[in-house]
Structure formats: C-alpha cells, structure tokens
Length: 212
Image (cartoon, rainbow, N blue to C red; front, top):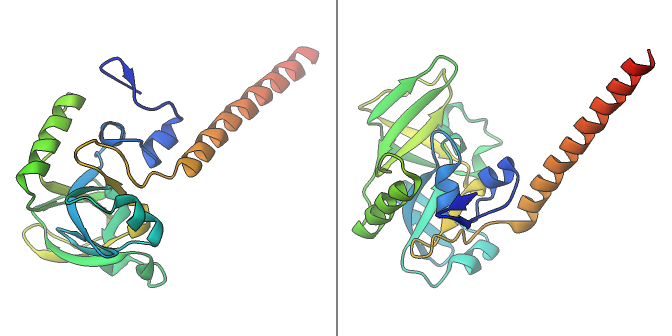
C-alpha cells in the first residue's frame, strides 16, 4: 500500500486488514472502516468512551508514556451482548451506550453509536479522512450486530467488545503500537502458500487434461 508515493506496508490483503502498520493502512482497508476511539491509560486499564479494558503486560508496555491514544476497533469485533455466548463474554468487555441509528441489511445489521472526543482526536480523524480521500471520519462508532438483534435506534443497549482484537495507535505518529509483526508475517506466508498450492493444482489439472 502506497501513500503519496511512499510505501506504507507490503503484505497480503489479510495482513493489511488484521495487522495494519499505521492509521492510514487501518483506515483504508475495510468496509465499514475501522472505528478510532480516543483513550487514556492508567495502570493497565485503557479508558475509552465505551468503558474500560484491561490490557496485558505486553500491550501496557507498548503504549505507556502517552497522554492520548487512539484505539482501532473493527465493526465486527462488537456484538449485541444479549446474543453473545456465555463462554465468550470473559474474553471481552461489555458496555452500555445509546444507539443513534440502526441499519438492517437482511443478513447483517449495524448500529451507530455517537461518542465525544477531544479536539486533538477530531482533528486527527479529519486529517486522516483527507489522506484517504474519503468522507470525514466522524466521532461515531459503527458496530456490527447480529441480524436478529432487537437493538433499536434511540434506545440504550448493552454491547460486547472482543478486547483481544483491538489495535492501539499513537495519534501523533499514526504508528500501530500493538501490531503483532509475527502474526502478520504468518498471515502473509499462508496467503503466499495458498497461491503456490492453487498454481500447482491448476498445472496438475492442465497436465491431466493434456494427457487425456
């Protein structure tokens, strides 16, 4: 992926999606795009507009020493808390929020949740939108919920967030502070292997047809 003629990241599409190197890559890949929420760190607790998340020691070390952080969360890492299986709930966190709008698409559904953000964050989102040549990234989270969810606009509801899959960015540099480079490299290795396997299978079929 390029930005103004400079390489941002060289990787498979899945690595770009799951392990983006910075805000630009994270904001470019995905539809709806990744949500960016302001956060502060106190001890091992990450405080966001939608509640707190406890971080493991590795992530605390990676993000400490900064007054303000941006947390990146894909829409599909949320769900209606009432529909999440009990064994999964301890892997994330739950929070209550007022829903502004819901969008039902038949096989899927989205809820839009407004939140407040400091001027530094809104400025960063505005600049990022210009970088990506897209609509302004508003202070509103897009949350994917099950199509059967009865969450409705104008009401407060309880949501679940998979805290294992968040990314934390430095709003000044745009760097993804919690990117797992090894996991990302493995995703690209597997993608390359899939291409090799597919090519070999195609050649084998061609040889078989030619022999027949």
